Length: 118
Image 1 (tube, one colour):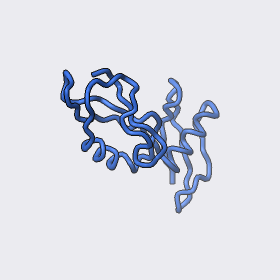
Image 2 (cartoon, rainbow, N blue to C red; image 1 turned 180 degrees about the vertical axis):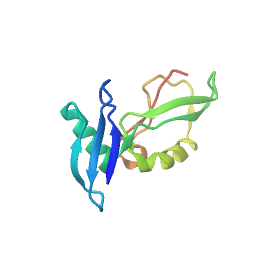
Image 3 (tube, helix red, strand yellow; image 1 turned 120 degrees about the vertical axis):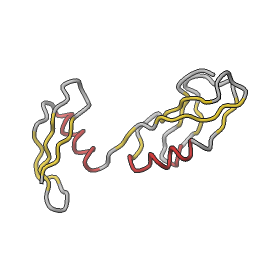
């Protein structure tokens, strides 16, 4: 079985092809033009991660919501849970871009941070 992953580490956007066993184990990996592509494709296949971007409610600000993101990627399977938690958060203005809104978000050793001033 084959799996194609487009590497997003650099602008070359290599089409990395993984040959997989019946149980999903990587047998071979081709198509990467640099070592970073191999690392990216392997990680994307075994433990995909994404940076969560969302909004939280704001009291006393010029806008009703504040855009936020995680300061590091989190496991892809935690995105829905992260969105649900973010929907329950309310902060008090003023907030400065970069302020930590939630430390150790979801217990994953990542912080939820503000991405603008309010």
